[in-house]
Length: 300
Image (tube, rainbow, N blue to C red; front, side, top):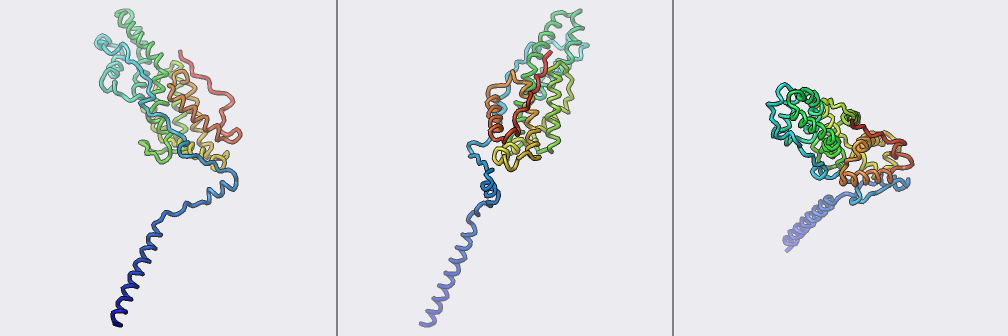
């Protein structure tokens, strides 16, 4: 009997040890409380601004909802043989090809800029030997000129690249992040190009423009803006982070001013919401609109 009691005691001790180990492991699996130092500091200084998930800054609408419809016009069925001797012949051939018809917005913009640049010389040559064809080319040139702001919007503010600029932190992006200086330089280069194009200078460096767009896409303005809206007074109190956000937001606002007449409603709603949130979260004069907005680029 003594042997059995001893054996039973051993079994009981083993079960007790196993239960204790299980409880210890179970306790270790519980989620740890979040580290509170930043929140405590912010609440004590009266600087903490919390934003509910439903109130977080939203990225622009998807590109398919923003793209402005732009008809191809009267060059679709043009007899290219009749354009022999004109450099614009190759341009029309490219834009009428299957690749041209399904080109991304930036490529279509560059093709139309090429037409705007090359067509006038061809029109002048044809006026003496083929007036009807010259008139067709001239009508197409004037149509492209009127469509240019919409073409620029589709390739910039309404593009995947500019949408990627405003993606929220944690959202997978198709473009790798770039440095602060690269993003700002790219935004400024595109704005200078846009002003030239809208003013009648249709020269374009195709590769440079595409590189600039890819650098804009990796600019990370969405991460900066979300951080600003969440902890503006402490994390962005007139320091370098606030300047990085300002340096991205200002050229975007400038481009929006240049293209104000053709911005689609969905983009306007998003733009107004973005600006309202920044203004509401900004202390004093921080990130307020500049004293004078840029003048719209002229259209010849």
